[in-house]
Length: 99
Image (cartoon, rainbow, N blue to C red; front, side, top):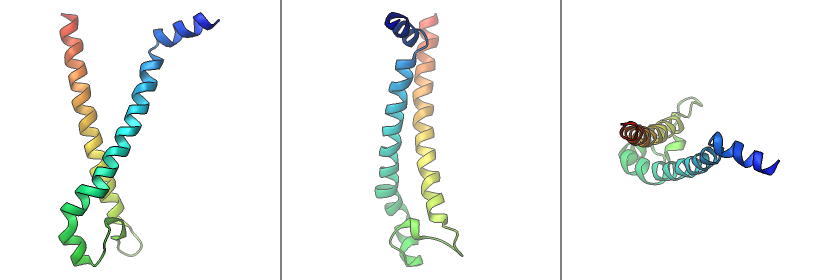
């Protein structure tokens, strides 16, 4: 029974998928921190001072917190770009391996 289970995990790449999910989650935390703690204050500092707020999450209009959306959009774009670069490299290696 245990051998069957280990064979199943290897056959369907479940272990690799689990590792990818864990690394992806940590990458997302890292990128979120870089965006919210480094890039957003540096890029938007003049706009934040003009708006009279200290944090982009405080930017809003009539209860619509568009600052959080802008930060989440930047975060998403960075993660999507990193995933794109990784997938492009993996696909290239698979193409070369098939030849």
